[in-house]
Each structure stands twice: as C-alpha cells, then as structure tokens.
Length: 477
Ligand SMILES: C[S@@+](CC[C@H](N)C(=O)[O-])C[C@H]1O[C@@H](n2cnc3c(N)ncnc32)[C@H](O)[C@@H]1O
Image (cartoon, rainbow, N blue to C red):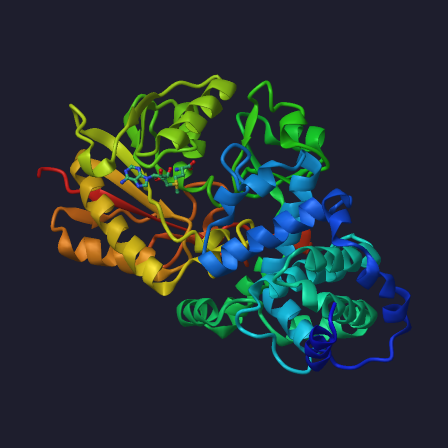
C-alpha cells in the first residue's frame, strides 16, 4: 500500500490509539495471492456480491440464492457456506441502518458515493460482528483479506481493519442505543406503513422485521401430534410452529412421507375462507408453488391449479407429488385462461410487492419501490377483473396477497366493488375459522401484519402480512 492511499484511509477513519490495530498490522503485509484459498473467504465474497446486487441493482435475493439458478458465486459454495451467506446478507439487510450508523461513527467523513464495494465489505463484516455467532477476529481478518484482494478496495484495507476493530470494541455499549435510534427501514417504506397503520403499529411491524422468523408447517392431520414430534407448538390458527431449524427441513420426520408442507401461518388462512368446497370446482389462479392448492385438495375440492410460470409449476408438481395429492395443472397467463366451464370458487393469490414477507425476505424494502407497488396494484386489478369472469353467478372470488400496502389490498378491492355492479362483498365472519378473529376487520376482510399473533416470546410470535377479501357474483346475472 503506497503512502497516498494510507493518507486517504486515515482521513476517513477516526484516529484511535488501538493496540488491536497494531496487533493485526500483519494484514497489510500478507500477499494477495493467498486470498482465494483462505477458508471462509469465498463465502464472504459471495455475501458481499449478493448484498451489492440487492442494494445497487435491486435484484431480489430469492433468485440470487436459488439452489438451481442462483448467483454463480453462491452456487460455487457448499450447503453450509450457502447458509452462512444467507445469514450474513440477511443480517446486513435486516439491520442496514443500524450498521450504517455504527460504521459512520467510526469514520471522519462519509465513504465516497462510488465506494460501494468497500461499503458492502464493511456491512457484511459488521453484520457478523454485531449479529452473528462469528468471532470478531475472523470477521475482521476476512474483510481485510477481501479488501486487499480487490483492486477497488485494496488501498482501503487499513481502513477496513481499523473501522471494524473499533466497531468490535464498542458493540456492547453502542449496539443497543443504535438499534433504538432507527427502525432499520428505508424511509419510503416506513412512511407508507405509518400512513396505513399509524406510527405505533408501523414501529411494531418494523421491529418484528428485524427478527429471525420461526418456521410454520401446515399438516395434513393431527397438528398436536406433529408439534410434539417436531418440538414445536400448535398456533391458534392450526399451523405448527417450530422456533428454528437445526438442519435441512427435508430431513425432518414427515417431510419425505408428505405429511406436511412449509407455509407461513398467515398464508394458510385464505384457503380456509373458501367455505365448504368439498366436491366443488375450485381454481387456484396463481397457484405455484402450491401451498393453497394442497389445502383445497385436502378440503375435498376438484382443483385446477393455474400459473404462468413453467419453473414455478414444476415446483408445484413436485410438492403435490410429495404430498400424494392431485390437481389439474394448467400453465397459462390468467389473462388468457379460458376454462370450458365456470368455477364455483376461485382463489386469486395475486403477485404482489411481498411487503408482508419482509421477515423472511429482508431485501424487499430495498429492492421494491413505491412505483413497483403502483404497477403491481394495477396488474392485480386486471387479474381480479379476469378472475371474476371465471366464476358462476353465486360463485366466489377470494382475493389475497402478502402485501401490507392498502393500495394492493383494501383500496383495490373497494375500487373493484365500486366498479363492478354484479360483485358484492361476502364478509368474512370472525368465527368462520379457528384463530382468525383477531385478523378480521370491521369490513369483513382479513388483515394480518407481522406484529400480530403474540405467542409470548418474540421468537415464537408474528406472522406474514396478508390481506384477503371474499367477493361474490350476484346470483341471477
Ligand atoms: C404469490 S405467488 C402464489 C403463491 C401460491 N398461491 C401459494 O400459496 O403457494 C403468485 C404467483 O402468480 C403467478 N403469476 C404471476 N402473474 C401471473 C399471470 N398473469 N397469470 C398466471 N399466474 C401468474 C406467479 O408465477 C406466482 O407463482
């Protein structure tokens, strides 16, 4: 490292007489050629790359971490390292503002706007130091090695070392106040939640977004027995909840036998609001990967599962096969789907902004924009108009999605009802299904938020944000 870059580095760092910094001065002498074989480095590099793709290019994390089509740097890792990458990126996104604030306090002036690679290295290392069970020294050493191996960040290796060591020293005292000082959400997202739910409820939702998510299962039968067998609890809504997973979900008892499937407690609710559908013709219009399709089949309906995506339908078929369930599967854009006969009931679980799933998808507030929400709401309205043409008079459309935004829920359905003379609201009663009473609004629609379902401990509480409304086609039309 030349004298000039040393100066650049120093001007950004708060000077600290740090014994730790001296102790690790050897970082600066280690040759870069050693970098690729350093254990743990590939995982850090992948995490930094993925964080960059989310923040700089608004690329959804789900695709980047897909086990078949994910980012090449992620795909090159073994399963253990992939899990570590997801944990690092997840923590960095869940606590993005907290991390930014604590890093900023260690810098004399903000990082240059174009120093994104450096910022992402710092954020991934800070996420490990502050929130993960990784030794501070390993997090710092790997970040420094990473910085040295990349021509864009090479000259900042000393800065990385100093900032991160300083962060590790102050975390006990500074982390609590830093968490309290921010909601860790981008401004637009917090503002929209506040507008929809009020300041207190919005803050409660954002607080839950910073927590790890429990795993919910929908079981074919006997939730109590499965809860005992898997070490979970039965929720008031009937789902089985596991606090956390120790290994791959596919190795849990009952998975291979097709006794249950993973489905958030909130996502399991809409299908329970279709009434008695035994022997009825039911279409699941945006069906993949098929959680709700499976519920309809188990409720005795004659089910047609429609989805536009070939890949997602493959997952749906695989899931139904494992569960030993059958449906007619149709690949079609709903806007072009023309069944021979109308249905008794259809579910439109529409593609949405997914702002109700931030607990499991912490990238959503950073990849979506208010413009995306408006566009998705417009698409959902077209899909709802179409879905309504597919039911017989007296039949029902259940409209649902996992957005927290009224534009995609309450407002959209109100506008549809106002514009559609032969549609009427079919209000949902709080007694219709177990455990739903707290989520039924005065208008007879379903609204859950992540701040709901208090099970006494934060690690067992919460559920996805979901909206559902039931609409009936007036008979005699
Ligand atoms: C929220 S997901 C559905 C989740 C599913 N109902 C479940 O519970 O497993 C939305 C689905 O809509 C599908 N989709 C999006 N646009 C569509 C369209 N125009 N026609 C049909 N399917 C569409 C997507 O491929 C995606 O699988």
